[in-house]
Length: 148
Image (cartoon, rainbow, N blue to C red; front, side, top):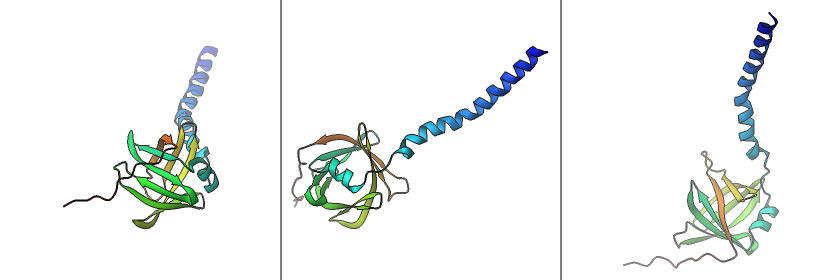
């Protein structure tokens, strides 16, 4: 009789533990991002000033941004064409305004061991970019397209 009671007790405990596994896995997966604090403007400026940062998305290169004095920037989709802009802090977000679009594009930046992670906050799908390279060299920007 004691053996049956012990087996039922162990089975009950195992069953309870198995029901907790999805919750434990969710907590482990969700906690790294939620535990991180977005960079503020001063931290972002210290990290990026005088650098060109290259960002990747979905396994490929997405674009690059050169961080100039006075919170000015130069962005390119790596096609040789660049656009000028500037950035500012708005609450916990870093927002960019470019010469061709007056609508601010706001991001949450997180500093990680392998570089920056940028979460686009204007998009309901929240595009996430990852720093794939950092350089002290300026980007190469070609002149305006000239055609017939």
